[in-house]
Length: 124
Image 1 (tube, rainbow, N blue to C red):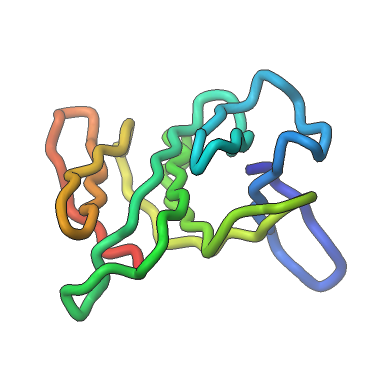
Image 2 (cartoon, rainbow, N blue to C red; image 1 turned 30 degrees about the vertical axis):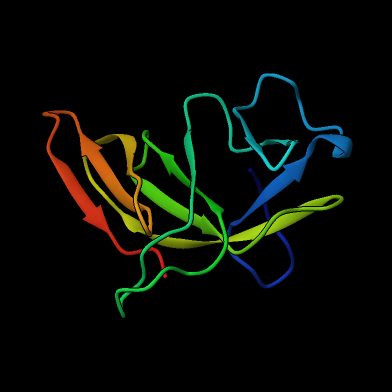
């Protein structure tokens, strides 16, 4: 994920496939045999088939990214085949330092704060 700006827009965040030439020091996630550079140094990224409001799963595994320096949390709707994919901002979680995943029928996302308190977050 990298931050870009465009005319008439605020910050956009994008997932870059390795073929895009993204810098090699950015965090990397692996999914379905492919590697993706996500975020910037210090960001935390996890992959899951996230539980949604109605109790089901969203149906496909996607990336969620935490930017600990600001507490911002982002979700990607898919995977970049070439180039980049835009993420949506899920919110801000003050004092967040990490993400955890509880696996099961649907994966549950937990935001971990600096006191190790784990708060569930609905992605979809």
